[in-house]
Length: 404
Image 1 (cartoon, rainbow, N blue to C red):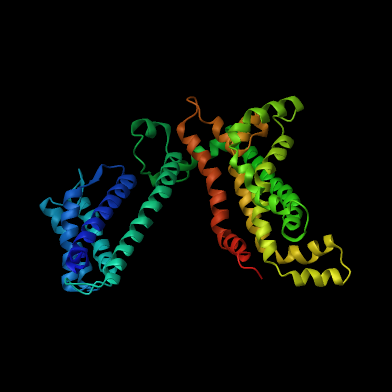
Image 2 (cartoon, rainbow, N blue to C red):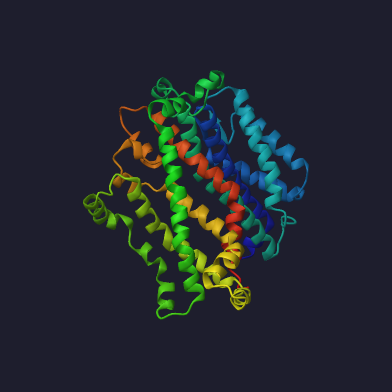
């Protein structure tokens, strides 16, 4: 057990693992950025990371020279042919990549070992702090890569020409000298594939879905949260039961019912089925918020002669704006990204939503860059909307967590 509380052992282990993570990250990033074959040498990464970790802990974490030493060491390793990141490129390119790797390692390793005071015996707190810092850094890199790499590939592919994709499908670098011609796929989507109509259809359907959802979920959530009636507890607990039934199980009955009633291939049909999937989650989110509002404010309104509906309109809803905003954003995202129902119910291209329109591009007759451009068009607006309003959404979701 004592060996695990030893500063030298911790520095060597975390240094080796951290260098391996950084080398892999740098190799992947360089390969995507340049289109060349970069790869990490895991054995050398472990070896130089172990040495670097020991150097930091023996010289003292936080030494300013560790940054310079780390970069200089990996530059030297590149010159003599022992770099953690290997590529069939010029010596200058290898020096730049491994020098940057050494710089990052020299900056980050003292931070990871901030609580480790030396190579000898350490407190459990110092060791746990170093491990947690390493896991935190690894988590940031890992989950960022999961999100960023597919998005990067999608964007870069959308900026390619057909000849470039055929020449090297794995080359995700771009030629900036093309200027505005890089966006040719986007222009062709709107000009030749009616993507403007798909965008407007999705916007209209998503906004109307939000309106219909709030129209039903606000009074429903208020009734469950405030009124007393038989079966109230059962209804409150069973609101989300609809999500226990996969939508694919209901696909065939929905398709048959909508075909028989003439609602298939209509915007009205979509507006009938989308709120069915969003109202339960809106009810669940809003009832928790309404329960957190003080009863005294509503009771004062009732004593002043307001009806129950007037109390909801003039008192409850103004106080619930953060929750309403977060629910609206969440419902809008669900409606915007919904694919299965739109794919099943819509056949007329003039009524396609954005996701249904993108599915129509998945054909051997349509260039792959058009499919990727359509995916970017569908992803970026909702991403910008979420990132711009995320703090309001978080505020609305947490505002009702503590009863007022």
